[in-house]
Length: 525
Image (tube, rainbow, N blue to C red; front, side):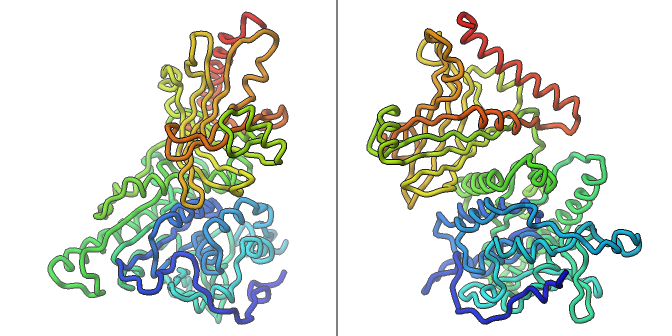
């Protein structure tokens, strides 16, 4: 196995300006974007960056720690946020894996890590578009990477101009997961246990606004088991360090308000925070197929759009409560992809499907549905759940993230004998707002139509941010039997680690679903 230094390339690259750098003549507030760690789950941050790219925000400085360094290296390699998302979506997780030499596992004293960085260096980094020489050549924006100097027990900040493969690997070598990197006689590791987001580096560089993308869990639930205990130790250290930085910045803000600004900020430093509402799934869930990068990207995009819509100029307080997350409630999640012929210029779904077939244009909706508070969901006449999605549409492109939408399961239809399954959400393409609305018409017609009703989505595309806008396209989306069986395999219970509780939740949801189908079709079954 070659070392990371042997794989790294050192050829010079042409200077380039990455996405997010301030334009020529910019005179607005100086902003820093801070990407926390969070493991291979951090495709989430690509979704956040996609949402930020739809605004006029720009950043003079970007700092990254641990897994966040992967996204910063992609950005400084010249990838746009949409390109980053596509790279994450198509990454084969097995390509991130690497083994230590066998003798390291056989000798307990030498068994310092579960695996090596070989998979990342040889396969994952190239696929993700990371090129060290291009990172070094980036201009117009300063990047900083955090690594932990284990020999001196201090965090070190590496400017992007000095980054090499050894520092990149060391910065994501979490203790026990990957081994430390020896460089010039010094051992380096991931800084996550010491500082998983370096806000003070941004402050020292004159940042007036801190835009923090935080992916570490932070709830009041303490779980058992070796994996959860390790993760919770990391979360305690990372969140505790972040709170200490909050306190330091708040003290600095008091000085600034009194006219004493040691780093040149003209007014108090402001915080903007984008984070999940509930903790992200852990890395093993990705490797086991319980969630995928596409879903995480959609989550990041949705969380960012939600914050951007609600943010104020004052930002958020530098308090521990700002980074607290909610506990997941009893519910279920599942993923569903429906696709079919679809065409612009039609308002009737069947006509749009015929035109789409002639013109070979298709639309695919990749939906992630989350049912929260199961009892409330069942008692709600509309049976409303949250929907996150992305869209592939021939004229528009692939992997277009949607803002948060809604899903209604067996909501009342136009007459007492009809029910509808509704999927709807807004999205943006090239600065234009669109709203996709589709429904399954659950109604007992003559003949055996149950399967057709449950798998056919009559869909319209509206211009604007809701259904009141002009219809600019239509089509019919369907799901095949193999794809439907895959949907069943994605159904997961949320809100508890107990297998018994999970089984009870799934049974409750299954009983509700089957009961509604029976109510709709029993006379013909």
